[in-house]
Amino acid sequence: MFRLFSTFTCVTILLALAGAVTAQDAQAQARAPWVGTTLSGKSCEGRQPTSGPYDYLDRAAHAGMLRVVEENHFDKGVESLTKGMSTSVMGDIHFVLQAFPNHHRALRSAMNFTLGFDQWPQDSQGLPVECYLQRAINFSPRDATLYKLFGYYMHRRGKLEIALKANEQAMNLLPGDVMLQYNTALILVDLERYDEALKLAKPLYNAGLTIPGLKNKLVRAGAWEHSPEEIAAYKKFLLETAAENAADAAASDPNTPPSEATAAGSSGAGTDAPAAGSAD
Image (tube, rainbow, N blue to C red; front, top):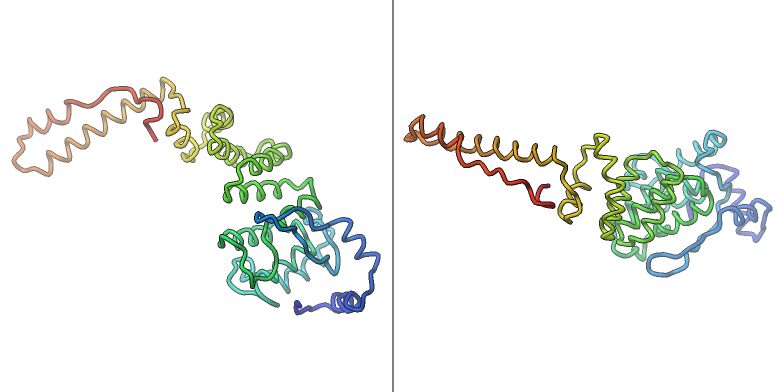
């Protein structure tokens, strides 16, 4: 049982323990039911909030309740998974997500906690994050952040098709999100759907994206075709690197005459164009 702080919450709990079912309880069950299953195939099941549920996208309208919930159950210690407030870390996170099913920061913390274990610890409070995410998406399907979190989590767990569908739904809601497109392309690479990954990756890099991971994966897979400009730049890089290496070697050898050092720096640099997939 969570240690509670507000009179309203305490009264609601007592009524529930006495078997009273309020109209608000029924409304909460209708609006935010527990849906889906865990990765191990168990049904996601949990109690309904003592107040709410409230949509985190509309948090300005519920600022007072959000403040009460966060001040008592979601400080920096809980968010960073270092120390609980009223109970264990996941107990407090569970309380927050009961009231605000799509609380973005609490969901990220729950995801980080779940990713820390191959299997959900038997003695832990709360539920695996996939339960909270499925409930949140069902509760607030217009919230793009939920699909992004679900896609990232499923990608980390190796559920690539599920991850891709989640990211595609997020892109429908956020068509201009660069990092979402980047992460979706990474999933497509892992699925070996390279043509689709290239369609997302090329515009990103042409627009100036400097994060190399996606491009490197496509290069290693032999899917990235080098442009004439890239080939020319690579040749220039090889020449400059060879010259620098020769000069450094000559400078470190006091017996090398200056004329030989000069010759070493100007000879034999490889000029073959990189084969597709050879450059990271």
